[in-house]
Image (spheres, one colour):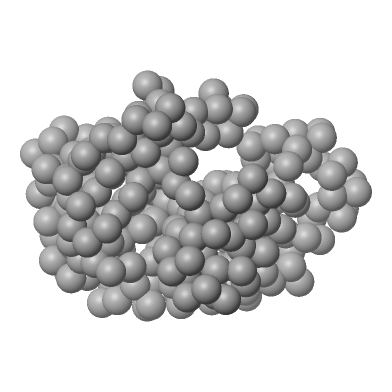
Length: 242
């Protein structure tokens, strides 16, 4: 569909930059294999001038908080047991805790939930450093009390997907202006029709279409080349969004 991997799951995207907006975990029993694949693709892409940018979603941080409401028995078994799973998500398991919560790539701001103006800090780097500091130093119990990981934080905020158009576009203007970005791409809020949602005349895109089998198995990808934005679907259908 997006032509960045071959049938064996190896990178063939050359200099493409692929951004994954989080929530790989809590989607069934394949958590470990999916993270291994992302890690492998990061290395392979770097060899060809491309990049793979995995971001944290709210479910990654929920697991670091030891909030296991969405964890399945099969997922626990894949780690070898509950204690082994806790160890993998603890502060000793630093791979996920060093991932960013947002990325600014060629003028496009990517993150899981959405960036409210109160969290539009002077730079993306500042926001990522704050998140990483919390994740690397705080216990699971302490993470529950971090405002950055709260309901209006970048991992949970649903305003861009659910608020009225006028409100969304006004808030979006503020954030994009502060961070000197052209558009925002978010996940988190599933689009039940399996189609990527474009709002504010193509300046914010909600790309969660329920790609996991657990959530319907709808597949889609957002392709950005210069100022042209397209939605790609497995059927071969291509929709010009901007």
